[in-house]
Amino acid sequence: MYLICLLLLGSGLPEKSAPNRSIPSINDVLVGTVVPATERLALSQIDHTPWDNLLQKYVEPTGLVNYRAWLASAADVTALDNYLRQLSRSDEQGTAVEKLAYWINAYNAVTIRGILREYPTSSIRNHTARFIGYNIWKNLKLHVNGRQVSLDEMEHEILRKMQEPRIHFAIVCASIGCPKLLNRAYLPGTLEQQLADNTRTFFSDSSKFRYDAANRTFYCSPILDWFKEDFGGDQAARLKRIAPWLSDPTAAQAAATGTGTLVYLDYNWDLNDQQK
Image (tube, rainbow, N blue to C red; front, side, top):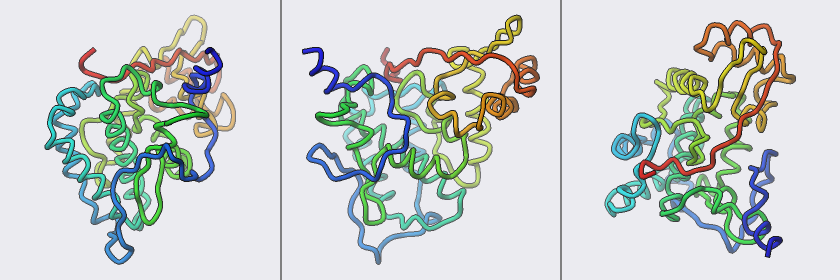
């Protein structure tokens, strides 16, 4: 029985290496729609207003989501599905900023849709089978530009390759340990400020970062461990990278020297649900 549970649920840790392009599976759940090549739009023409409206309605400033109320509104579940169909109209052509905003929104919207499909649930980890069955990160896929893109692919093969480490404080896997889900859509014109604000908010949360000056120890979210190569080639480089994002002047000054001890905190996989 123990072995079966491991097979169904996985090891309890997220897959950290970039996955290969996903192979169609009987467990796949597809969202969005197939759009003929002649009807696809440039990223500048994709309208994120419906997503923005839904976020303002169901996500509080702390990032917690009212999944129960959202699921109870057939009209707003349909509105989310329609937004995903709008995302499917993309031909992926645009500026780097447009691509970042598009794929951050896509990751968060597809994740929310996946949780609504399972709700009520206590954690996304209840839906991440590693070997047998449905894995939300691998099997929930958005139709885009003639292919089906999983959450894993969005994160590892698209967003991480854009060399912007602050995406790790913008994409949200529906967990308390994640950065807060911003209750506005990411837009090209506001993306830099949104990333800056959400990153500083993340490092101001003592459950995700704190500094012990007496022992020169940085207690960090395991996000900085799982994706450490995105923040620098060694510990000193990573500390220097996060230094400008720290609101505590003592911590920022210490990190800027690149010296100290890094200790990774436990990750909270509980659902980011307002109903808790």
